Image (cartoon, rainbow, N blue to C red; front, side, top):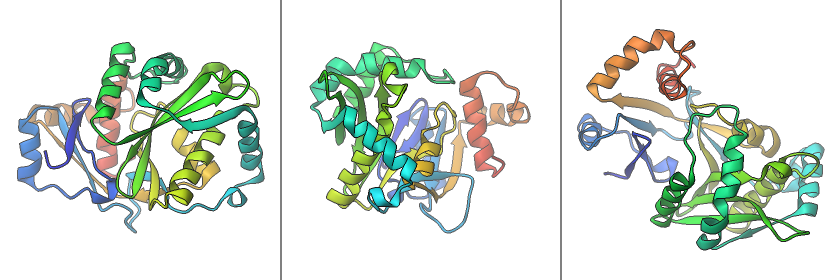
Length: 267
């Protein structure tokens, strides 16, 4: 459907962010006729105008020297403990669920269902597209203790599902620091990609990873335009619930209203 796919009842563009077009009325209506609750259209990628919606990207690789001394120290600690390497799909299929199950249990906001079937559905979807799979290995035990999936396009990529076993998030291991340094170097310096992305602005606020990347690895906001189109009855529901968005406790409803606020330029 013109490069759009249905994810959690929302149509979203599945290509590189800078290629997403502005949809005409007949196009977004055609998508809604196929099902789903809404269409998210983000266009005008990396525009000069500051907006309420953006992608988190990094388009320059400055090496360790371009990072703070605090970040460099944590990266070096991580490299002492971990090895980061590409793994085959089958390794992630066999060992990934235990890791991501622990990771989701640590989230401050539990808006997502995660079980073995959901994880396998995600992996099956990955197999239909172009992905890299990275494993994080304890150097001492050679055990895989984390992973990251990366969506690949022609000249850019998007960091995806990432999991680390709980015990390695504590103390002076700093696995995320080593992971993102390794990924940035691989895709930006070695493969010469135009940019790497950590996806669009989060609407669920379940993770602080985007702020982490901005503060420690010089990622930035690539502003774009956001338009959301709803099924007719969904549009009525959003309009009625919107004034109460700050007090509604249901996380999935709150996420939709957060995105509506971003569309209106109010968040």
